[in-house]
Image 1: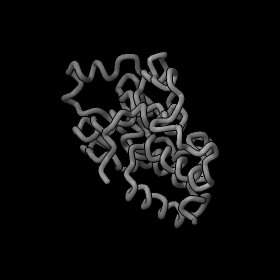
Image 2: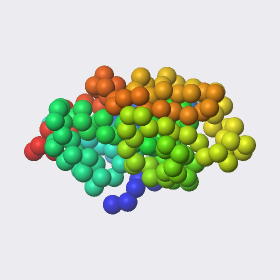
Image 3: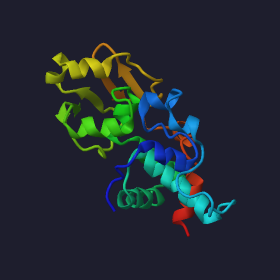
Image 4: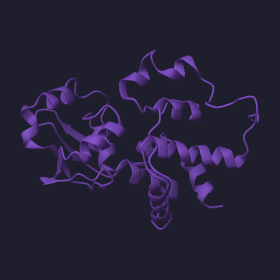
Length: 208
């Protein structure tokens, strides 16, 4: 199955909560979830109480929606999390947070992770001075994320950095506003990832 290309707000309605897939629109009254809380589809035949399987599946789907990851890649992340010492669910979220498209979003260089993925694919960023156009690239402590030098005189660059920082930068990242670069200070801590989704439900889904 290919990447989802339908309305992003439909995914939020399906999850029953804001996943912040549309950037600033999600925090304004224009957010469709503010007007219509019901999930998409025919609600007349929907069971009133979801099964345990449905609850676990929805939490897994939420994580996929938030980070824009396909099922095959998500399964590989989960397999690596099981084989890494520590709490499997937190290992999974820590890996997802380290994706380059997410780091670009967390530094405020993009309005959403989807937009971050697009501008990474277009080759606008360097990691430690090396062009990196792979959104799934996993950053490590000490890595420096910077804009392509030729971008800095463009209108596109001026639009992207307008109002930086747009949101609080996580403690595991450091933003240099004067140079418009970001540095990975450390790996994401448990507190950094615990509030995103209930990783325990995701682990239980894959442990069936």
